[in-house]
Image (cartoon, rainbow, N blue to C red; front, top):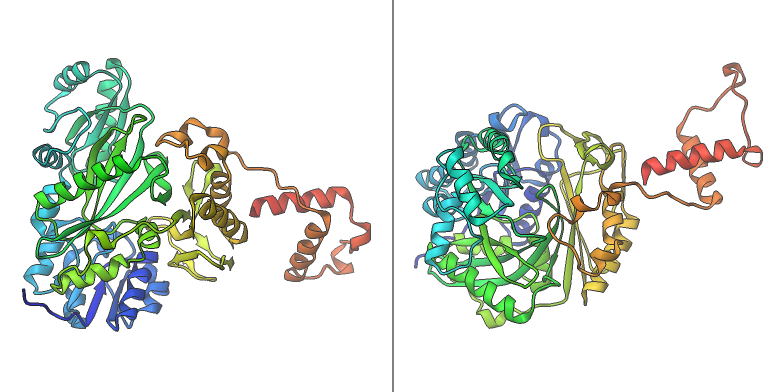
Length: 508
């Protein structure tokens, strides 16, 4: 097969994933092109890129989600290839097709593969042909309420209603009894229409306390495919992943072998090209059921990179150039354990509402086994228009316990201020006894609301007074004319000390 050397790549994305892709491009001596909205003029990915093009107003529907603007920027810059990252246009076949028509290499699967696996019901039909186990449910979109009730009664409540074009937990509702079916269909359909412009739904049997385990696969253009082991993504909040790790601490070697073989078999059956992820639900007896396929790079791909020593973006580029995979399955071995925490600009004490603002200070953890993938910097503004993910913190260790110890240490070192964030919530999770014992499942956080409560901070007085003294230097000095008396360290009252403690707790 003829190969083509890629010299310049346009990254059709923003934030941490755009920066992460650019770093691999730099490693390979490939020039990079950023695209940005008017809200992202000073964003980190724009500063890191070799060239940058404005593609419109802040709303994504007027900038990052417009294929014509991305293609226009690619043509103007002379980019050989486009990397879509994740989200935005990464799983839109129309964009993959537009790149193809413009003679630009799309670093992802073919348009027809995206279409085939993008439909949840279509993917279930393909999985059935590939003899991959599935959760009992429908393989076609529901016609109406009567059919939904009939099917749910047949497979047994509780059931899940899911969007046919869904993803990321959107358009999903748990239905525990027939009386709730009508309202659940209305709400799930409305959310699916808003998120995917498609309100069609299907039904799956609800698995009690399932784990979410996914398999990373990679296929070249010559048809050779490999798996890169699995990731455990069971710690979720309302179907959104919070902490991921690799490998799964739950499944046995025998189950791992069956799951990875099923994943490769299913991807091969659709002629997959590039990196992709097959997601499974796993019950407590280690029975696994195909959930869906993500035809792109996953947010959590760094944990796979940490345990295999492979750069997945580099593999995507080499496959896009037409090079065959140089690895054999036996070359890929598990090496230690990795954990990833997603850092969001959101307020855990206010139902995780997005918390845009300006980053006033940052202290980034460092040291052995710590990786930090970020799209921000001190002084940067977090806009309200996009997903509030600002960074990913990844740690590696020789064992799971070692990786979690490093994550605990790294999160204690991590400070970022000027806006609400979920670092205190993450600290609580990585020190939770059930999490450390790997007793989590997909609804664990929802079933344990006590985790969301902020832990009291017990700091020695000398630390409180030290920070208070630092804060004091940041404020204008009080003058006698202000009517406020200067209070020395020696005479500070307990009320004042408590006030400072409260202020500190706002930061931790």
